[in-house]
Length: 91
Image (cartoon, rainbow, N blue to C red; front, side, top):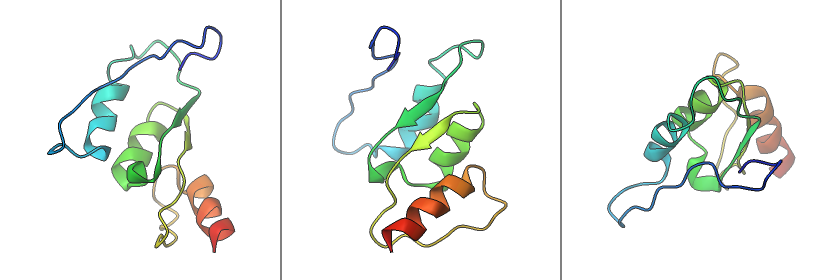
């Protein structure tokens, strides 16, 4: 969503056989590289390393709740600091 205009920047409607998380890198790539992404908001289904890496690759902030059974990730994972803080706060 563009916060200035409140326009949704990208959307993908899929069938029940397509998982949510694998779609995030494709959605991110619909936004041209020269357009900044400040943050990406999603539900817990997107709490995967692939999603966090895709968001971090565009220097954006991930606003994704950790899954109920989430464990901290190694420090070498992109976007790990904010995500591990969410996990710590949830426990």
